[in-house]
Picture 1: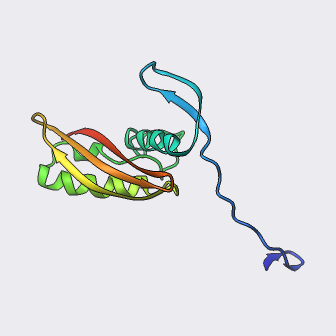
Picture 2: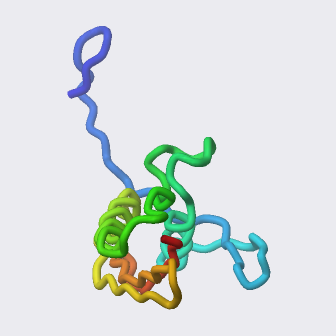
Length: 134
């Protein structure tokens, strides 16, 4: 029952999952054209989340994005576990994402950490990656 100003309402609610139907970002053309859904929509959401610095853009909720700026200048032994934790935390805010694992770190050049990981979603799994300056 739901409280109301006149007592309790005797109504039941069905929780429905919202569709992931969204505009499609075409990275190779630097354009947004068409629509996407399912696994492709989640891949796009993951890209946007890990490429957006949390707390930096007024248009996004403080729950959106990942915190990476404060990792600059920190030792790699601190950065790698923090990247794992922060990326996982940021991505799990999306209810289509079930888990994030298989983190692999590479150091292609001085001051750069390349992180690759597997994202498990309700539509399947895929690999994602990001380079971070440290």
